[in-house]
Amino acid sequence: MEYRDKSLVCVECQKPFVWTAGEQLFYADKNFKNEPKRCKDCKQKRNSRMGQSPRERVETKAMCSQCGKETTVPFKPTQGRPVYCKECFQARKTASV
Image (cartoon, rainbow, N blue to C red):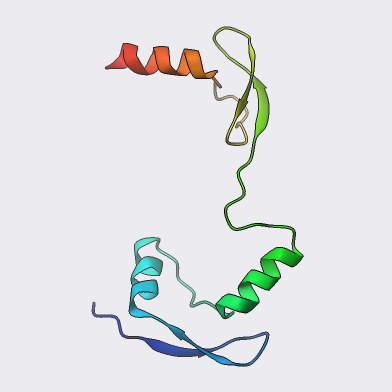
């Protein structure tokens, strides 16, 4: 499918903005179904109001499932899934290769 730049209207500021062909391709690759509703400025303002930064990393304290050492991981662990410290993770990674 060939994508072309498309003009949309922001639901917050009511100003037109361009949804580029590259952005449409990105949405298609990510399997997003809806067009964006806000221009980039309004989206950024909304994220800052909600206390979110676009690239904020989550750091969670957890116990290593293998050695029992306390560690931090860059994600929120899922119940029932093992969590490993850096050393145990690397050891498991090299053992599987």
